Image 1 (tube, helix red, strand yellow):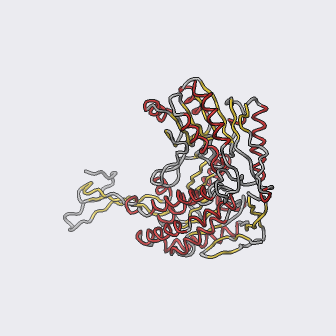
Image 2 (cartoon, rainbow, N blue to C red):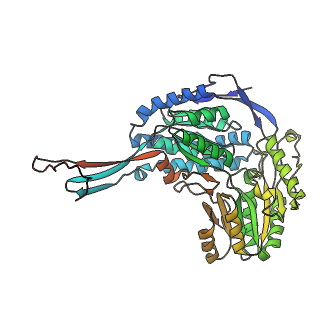
Image 3 (tube, rainbow, N blue to C red):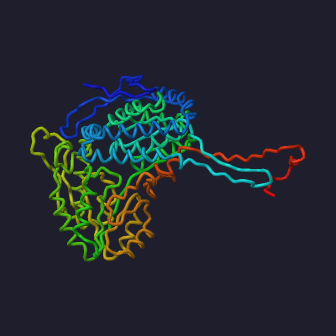
Length: 501
């Protein structure tokens, strides 16, 4: 059985130790590989390689870096299907869904291809007699990313292209549950002409994470995962003097007003709730039915949920693949049982689903579940279930829906389904959420905007990719210059604070 290695200084390596962890095929439940688990020693080796590469990469021209990104972008396009199938085999999501995450990640690479405009500094002439001021941005050094299992290609692609294109070198610690996508991307970078040591991968668990957070040679850490771990990463890394991006969990609401097209809303909410088996930080997990919209919306959601096709991710026609692990399957199904015990109505019950083909009898499948009459006190509302479970909360008024969202500790994404521009404008100004969709269930911004929520969905204040990503991976310098021509024109030095007079 193959072992998935680290990638350090331009080549594969099994690292300094012998510890490994199984990698499963979620559709069959069978182990398909081992992944090497890195130690602090492996992180040291990766940082040493990245530090050495930074000396030359940071001095390369912007044109050289952008040429690599253009070539990398083309390779991602050419290998989209292959990478999608690799993701599907380890994560469980459908190949089409996996290709979609590769495409959205590629958009960040395309953003970096235009960094010449983003990185332009400013110049102020004659701020004082014979004095000019200009500014520019420089890379930090070695930076790191710690990324989750649910988007093994896209989330790292939110980070490392921006970091690398701005002149940094990168150490990635991907999820050990589906590690192969990271190695595939590393090889694409190699083929694109990226110098050895600029992009490195250390697989592993908490030991590798802690080594990254504490390492004195790493200047900044980007993280996406659960809120408790995001808080731990932010606290530990900032105490070590690093910059930190830390994106946490979510509980995303979709509000449906009575004036909305209910079939349209139900169709899109169903896709937003059950796509990728609900294992998305932007998944719709709560439908907020306002007033008289409730009964008809639940009927439409039930109809849509029963039409979802569950099966292996590489099978044509599959809408919903398996969950990533057996533990995830059990956790989600237990949550449906708890919801029923606490008084929710289980309109559609996805527990115990079996795929017809006996090849997949031991796969980590659960079907879509739809819960009605959920209240804010129930576990199904309060917890981030991260599975194909949609909870319907009924409220009487639009203001009550907004208050429900604002009282929730998470503030990642939200959506409103309505035909009213006035309601949409009121909603987007009042909700305390970072990313908002109007008749769009999963409002993931384009790469030239930044991705990040509010409240417990973003620890600290640094979103990822887009202009905010450029600012995170660089620091500014401001230069004040004077070029006197003769002794007569030289200004006298003074002991008072300098002014522009």
